[in-house]
Image (cartoon, rainbow, N blue to C red; front, side, top):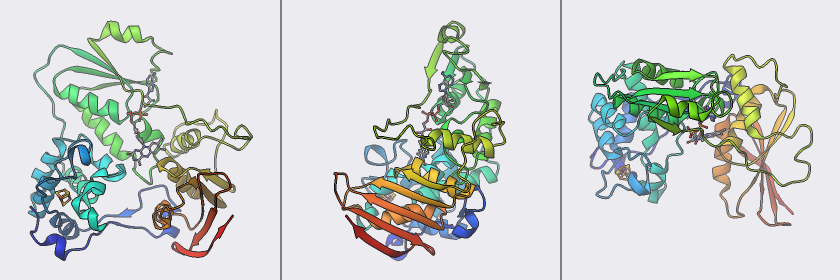
Length: 370
Ligand SMILES: Cc1cc2nc3c(=O)[nH]c(=O)nc-3n(C[C@H](O)[C@H](O)[C@H](O)COP(=O)(O)OP(=O)(O)OC[C@H]3O[C@@H](n4cnc5c(N)ncnc54)[C@H](O)[C@@H]3O)c2cc1C
Ligand code: SF4
């Protein structure tokens, strides 16, 4: 295990953020990486539990061997930690940035609300490995002679393609869009994860023998039967694109949009793609209301501020007992200087609680209304 008494001596720490006034001025990532020593301290907090709830059914869905690489980092063996981490996870620099970290929820130290900073250590291992040039294409010289088609190049398609190519198959990824990455590229904004991380892996996979075919909308521009004829197997990784229908009056009015067209266009614009033929969907100089409280909603709030919205109001349903602290933290992460949060009860006529947060998230003038 890490340091035997580490969890008693060392406080949990997470990376700090750039000040909100700075980060709303750009679309790039805004976390400030922690020093090597502080990352090692965080790894030292791991107790190497006899039953490590952080992975397996209760924690990490890809079975990252978390106590093992915490120990390796604590002992300064970053290269072996890199190898270990990649034995279960193709793209730890993605998950280290944007995974919701069920491992930390499950960590034994979360009984005291101070779980091991697993995600922070994971990102540090992955970033260091890339910086140090340790991530190389793994080319299998023994080819099976079998060919596999994969429809869709989101994280599911990418991980499958990489594993199948490393098993020696001839892998072809068919992607509708001009670039690979799925929602990593067109949904999630750069301030959460910059696209260079996706580009890096696409380059690695191309060197490993994966062929990407862009602008191929299977079932529209090319029939599925064509792939079945050309390849030994076809894997469908097309994701899920249908938004949750909102059965509310006025949802079809001008100026009301689903999140994805807004975020996709913002990502295309920022990524330098040609969007001239499309109606512009941009929050600049607008009062924006974001309905919802998950990842997608938070991406819309952060994008709206960065595009120059005058004000952003977020409305979300939450149980009346939901913690306000958690919600203010969400807003703080968005980089907003002046965000309103309205928490509504689930039932009709239930209480509406309004909070107004500004000046670095100090709650001011919050009140309860009916
Ligand atoms: C705004 C937003 C924010 C999110 N934030 C987070 C987060 O912070 N953390 C997190 O863990 N998850 C987050 N998610 C969820 C995460 O992005 C998805 O779970 C993940 O991308 C799903 O991966 P996938 O490969 O199955 O599908 P997708 O990423 O949707 O990829 C599917 C790919 O298939 C292609 N495709 C579809 N049909 C065809 C076809 N017929 N022919 C060719 N290609 C096709 C699409 O163009 C796309 O590239 C977020 C999602 C959204 C929308
Ligand atoms: S549950 Fe937490 S303390 Fe225990 S092994 Fe996993 S990360 Fe370490």
